[in-house]
Image (cartoon, rainbow over the protein chains, first blue to last red):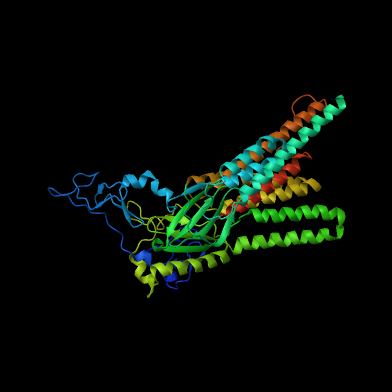
Length: 193
Length: 317
């Protein structure tokens, strides 16, 4: 086995790994902490074998020559060994699995999320550096904060304080613009008459 | 969209950049790597049953995080306020800033690391674990979780592991994680060391020249410029051969452009001066910057390039 040094990518020597805690790379001199787990010794799984269907046997929906081993728990299509997707204790066919409906019930396959709360906060705060832009950005920040209030947050965050803060700042900015506009309008009216 | 939340628990360590950030979380049966821009988060899951190895290597990491910048800014603002209101405290604040900077340099150089996780099909860097103490803490927690799923070794694995392949395997059946890969580009070589040393020395000598101009210093500075040009060319060769990383080549290009730009600026400045003075005819070409404005720019620019090169040299490979 070659456990590589993170710095030079050369394999760490066996005698260094025998200590099982720290290993010194003879190439670059970097000290590494190596933790190896039993998964390294698991036998790699081989290709899935599918059996040809005999006369009169149920066959796979996508592979008519292959014997069906299960039915999709959602659409009922027969699937062969190759096509059956074992997910959350049920068998799925590839079409149902990729159709995405399972996403409504689980977050286990989500690989990204848009952070509307952070977007709203940035839209509310960043334009303060060039304050005239807030006349546009404040309504946008308020819209994003309120429109996407119920959208799921980050997978790991719990609170909606960013959305609340963005809405509060945006309201203050809008209030400020209304006040300034009203002030100058009134001033102009007074000076006219 | 319904949101059936997993309960995630944060592992020690978080990388907070100006735009990008990263953190690690543990779920019921997997490790979640979260990489975030300000507007989006991306997730990668590593199931405890699949993790083959974790390697933490001590290397210098010059990470500038947003909390650190915030502290530095607050201190600088405090200095500017205190200078007017309580001048006696100014030196203490500068001292505090110097101590904090020294602490950051020590931690970055001596207490930093890079962490990599291996499964049978992937090899992933964990950016949030870049300080040794957080890596230790996170690894202790992870080991416990993985041991609950995979069990623990009952004998010396180093002997038995000789025949196994760590990480993803390429088409030829070799481990992509390690092996004879001499083509790994390095951050620094002796050529880059000479290049950076000459840049730094040139900056210092030009600074001395500003105060006390002498032909001897000018000649040394000229010789250093020749060294910079020669080593810059050698850096291109080393990058072409895959020995050096591309960053140093970019720095060499920037240095050559800078030297050339300063030389031309000096020539144009001399010509303009001569024209204003009413001189006619050719203007003498001066290889070294002698103008009062160009010298500080040259000195400061060379120093900045040297510092940038120093940072590049100690970037993890």
